[in-house]
Length: 221
Image 1 (tube, rainbow, N blue to C red):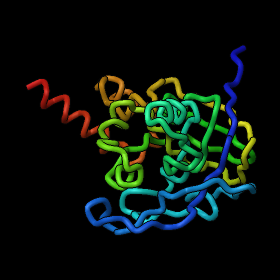
Image 2 (image 1 turned 180 degrees about the horizontal axis):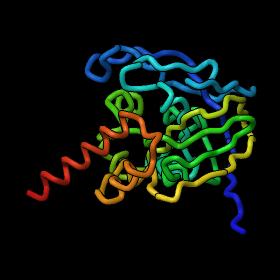
Image 3 (image 1 turned 135 degrees about the horizontal axis):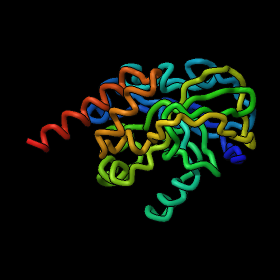
Image 4 (image 1 turned 180 degrees about the vertical axis):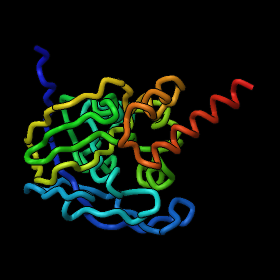
C-alpha cells in the first residue's frame, strides 16, 4: 500500500494592509499582496480565508483561486538566490507548506488540512504587481523560468486551518498533469489530456491551455 503523502502548514497568512501601486504595475491602483502570518486558526470559506481579500477581482480571486499555497522548499531556493530571507507571505501566499512538492502537485489533486478539503486548481501566473512588490529586476521572467509557481486551490469543504496542521494528499488524478506542466505548457499532448480528463478546470485555465496551443501551432508553421 502506498503511503499517503503528508506535508505541514508552517504559516497561515492573510492581508496585512492594502498597498498603493503605481499605475504601470496595477490597473486598480492597489494590491492585497502584502500577506503576513497570523497566530490563530483561520476559517476557510468557498472564496478564501477569513480576513483575506483581493483588490483586482478581474484577474485574481474567485472559487478557483480561493487559496494560494507556496512550498517552503521553493522559498528557500529563492532565498539562497536572492541572498535574503523570504518570510511566509512574501510570495503573497496564504499557506506556506513544507514537505510537499506544491508546484508539482497534480491538477485536481485533493488535500485535507484541518477540517478543510482543498483541490489543486491552477498555477500562479506572475504579474506586474508581483514584480513591483518584490523589487527584483526582471522578476516575472525569472519566476517564469524557474516555474516554481505554487498552487491555487479550490475549497471543496469549508473548515479551518492553522499553523502546524498536517496536509494530507487524499486523491491524485490519473492524468498526472501537474501545476508545473500546465504553467510551462511544453507538451501539447499533456495539455490535451488535462483538458479532456479534468472536468473542473476553470475558464482561466482553459484559456491558458488555448494560449499554449496557439503558441505551439505558430512555432510549427
